[in-house]
Image (cartoon, rainbow, N blue to C red; front, side):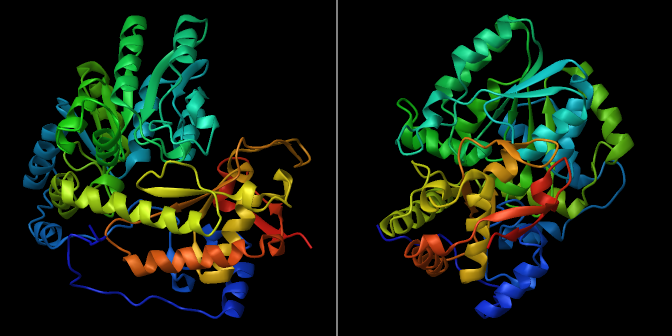
Length: 455
């Protein structure tokens, strides 16, 4: 069946198209950091799928019903009912986005000497763990080491390593399973792995928390790839995943297709009470959590739209189509393709660059200069370790570039343009210069650093 979006476009926005000279000047001004670029310089923005989706007509209409009452607004109860229907959790707190839920939860559960274990912590999750004084430990599956294999669930956690850690001397306070595994190249987590993780956590008395920003996309990939689940709906699979957990943090800027919002949901009343106090002190009252009534209304609609099989089928097909075009141009990606993003193997494409020359970051910069495409590096700039003099002493295991695809925003022709730009770079990869760091903070440096090309 031909690729066709299951919607029609009612509102359009002009796309900036600059000359190469203008893009080069913009990148120089930004200190060769895509995060520093102004939106009016970008042709195709694949930096993030967070809060960048297009609202539906139904969401826009629901927003007009927003009740902005400070406490007990009608909009909160519609939000609460939608989240409860999806997750089954009893204690539900709205927050302005997922990282707020992480901060509140980790503030209540973690502290110096404690450990948070995950299939892979993403950048802000790791930062919130470390800001609490705790240690973040990643236990990705062994399958994740082979970027080229078509193992269907590379996002799984390493169960043997998890079992050993839970039985060991470390003070493991919580296990966080990210679905899909964003830091692990957007790969899904199987229900079998999630169930086994829940059993290990229960046996050791350690809470299991889902980072559920892409719960619907994970559910769709389970339906497509895991035996025994093909006859289930996305909503049913998502609910089965939530049923295995003790709680969830969720950025609704992804799989509720809204511009702002999130939730923290828990089963334990005492923990929820402590989190609620922190919510009120830092985010807002428990019935709005830093969100406007219109946001709560649009979330309630988006949570139901995102589990529509027609929507998920087409979104997955879009990503797979782009993956096929990129691979046809001779550029490797992490296989199999996920849904929310593709991960280019920059280390393989730019073989002439050492990890200390940040090939992932170099490729991300080149994609903008060559075609106005903004994206993000997931390599040694993000994950590498430097010594006191700023020398790279521990490179990342892989040099990747993430192309995050916003929901309901770009059409097939936009994706074909992206593939054409990548194909052009692949014809002469050695022309792409490496990068060196000019300045960078110690924490979350990839958001703030400035670099320059190496001659």
